[in-house]
Length: 264
Length: 331
Image 1 (cartoon, each protein chain N blue to C red):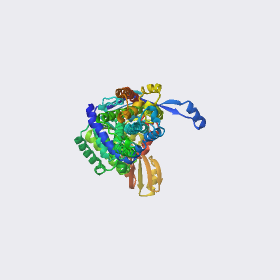
Image 2 (spheres, rainbow over the protein chains, first blue to last red):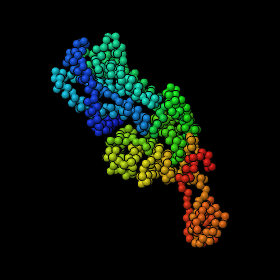
Image 3 (cartoon, rainbow over the protein chains, first blue to last red):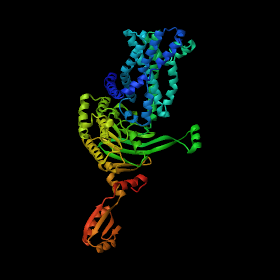
Image 4 (cartoon, rainbow over the protein chains, first blue to last red):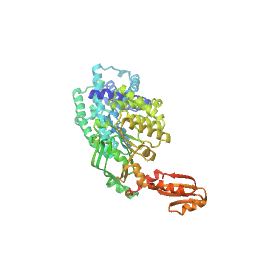
């Protein structure tokens, strides 16, 4: 049953959403460019020699921020905004009476968008290497595979967190404002602005209990070859998914009972 | 004998509505202390619908007909009472139930805006577990019935409203549901598109014996499709029965316009026992009860020199309009 779901429904959804995303290629290219914040952070770090404090070489730091850029490109989630709009405008109504949870549509939309982003992200990375030739490296296949898996898990965690927040639309109508609150810890604790290793020890011990460092810091360290605890990283990613998924299902089930089909 | 496919007992629905007083004071008060009240929009409605029936839900804006449809298809939970549709509790949204129904809302669309409708059709086909061969067959059949073969490969955003609505119908019917919930399906369509859609629905009902629950503000939709209507007034059912019977009861008289050969005859006719509505020279309009039309005509034709004669059916919109504004209309 699950294989049938993946084979037929998800594959067709992905195919259709990919065709749809290709219609927005220019917009997606701009979104890809807008994700270059790690490169600005790299500039701040290297210009101020901040890497010396955390004992990371310039090259390794460059690779870290490039990988952070890549991980971010393939784990960015906006489901709360799409669902909020669809829910408030009543667009979600036809999807609710189809034998497929509407969140699969959003899930496929995200994956299709990531596929569309891929060439643009590669192009940006090429430019990065042209200006930083010393940073060029080729990760081995095993590391690459683990990094792709951890990036996908990071995407899953973020998708679940946002989906839970999105379901709050059934109660608050403006759930995206809650997501904005989550954006602050995501920005500071995920490793997008600074590797988590740069935080003071007592702060780090707390941060590693939250899902945030496993969103960017862990996959980026893994891909760039920086020191990281692989087993802890994967265990925590899986643990957070296992915690968030039933929570999402519960909130979804309770939320749909509150649905009023506004705007339709 | 057809069995009941929809059974509704004492169904009610309440919504929590927040209210705000006007002005700055009201806004500040609303900011600190939200006042909400429970509004019962559907009040203990009960009815049954048989398999293959086409039932029209009539009511003014906000009467509650769309809310009833939403509860029937499982989109919203009922507050009280029970609903059974094809043996299922709709609000549980079980896969078996969802595969039997469809909901079409005239003002909402499920087609992917930037892609040709064919992409949405194949997507829906996979959602409803149809294999590609079967999906292709059904798309061909439905597109021929709906006459939209040439529009299948044009992006939805480039289609006219009528073409889009037909495509919506195709997307919603690809899994061949046997219960259709249609909420104002002809909204915004031109007269020809409305007629074509009605023809299609009649054909679909005839070929598949599908049950159709329909709301529409266009009386032509109701009169040409529905033998039975359920009138909803402020959340309650004010009439449930045959449309013909409703029209007869609401409009027990017909207008007869008689053109006499001479003004003298017209004057004579005016002085008889007929209920005269108006008179101009040799033309006179009388109101005659439905059950005495034949005898009245016989009497007029035998006793007066008549040049021409018309029988006017009262405008159906006007008659139905009466029931939409008054709950306890004498029916």
